[in-house]
Structure formats: structure tokens, C-alpha cells
Amino acid sequence: MKEIKYSDKIYLVIGDTRHCMRGRYWWTKKEDFLQVNTWRLPIGQKIQSEVYETKIDKNNKAMEMLIVLCGRVKCEVYNEDNIKINEIIILPRELAILYRGKYIFEILDNGTNVIEVKNKIC
Image 1 (cartoon, rainbow, N blue to C red):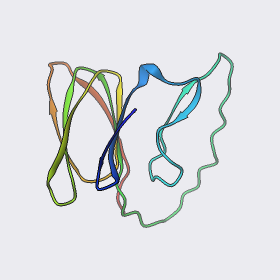
Image 2: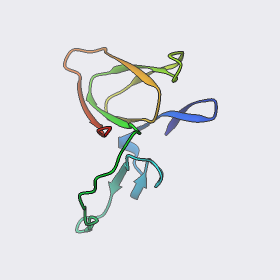
Image 3: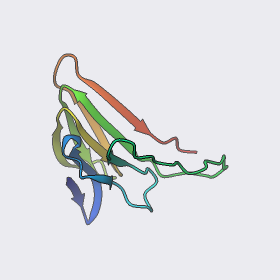
Image 4: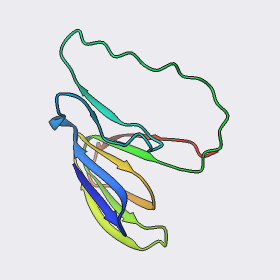
């Protein structure tokens, strides 16, 4: 797992999903708005979800996650002042968690397929 930081703040975490640790591996912390973990469990293992309730909360924190299934995506990372702080290529089967700032994505290969997950800001 690789972290891209600027001024001691995490902007992006990226890692290869093919190399998940055994058990449940948490990519995010409990205090992060988006909770991301990978499972590498034995056959028959059961995971019970929490009971989800509808709550009316104001959310002003955006987080996003990308999984590149195939192809490659260039990701330019900018801070809150719109200054470019890094650039990275997200490869097939890599997961990227976007914590803050601004991002510009560029598709690098024909047939690139990406899953994007993000929360809605209320």
C-alpha cells in the first residue's frame, strides 16, 4: 500500500488487490467517512453485516474509491489550493482511495474498466 501525502495529510492511498492479506484488511480507519476493507477468508467463513439505519445527517466530507478492473488510469493529485502535488498511474486490479483535494483522471488504454464509489455530500 502506498500513501500520497502533502503537509502531513493523506490525499490518496493506493494498493494492489491481488496481494490482500489473509483475513480482513482495512484500507481506511474507523474515523474515515468511507469504510473500505478486503476479505481473504476460508471457504464457509460468514461475515455478518451491521444493522443499517436511515439517519438524517449533514455530511460535508467527500471520499471516493476507484478500482481499475482492466486498463490503466493516470491520476493527477491536487491539494485544496489547486496545486499539483503528485501524479500516479493506477494499474489493473489496483484500488485507490481518495481522501481530499482534487483529482484529474485520464484513461490511458482502450477498454479500460473502472468501478467508482463515492459518498454523496448533503
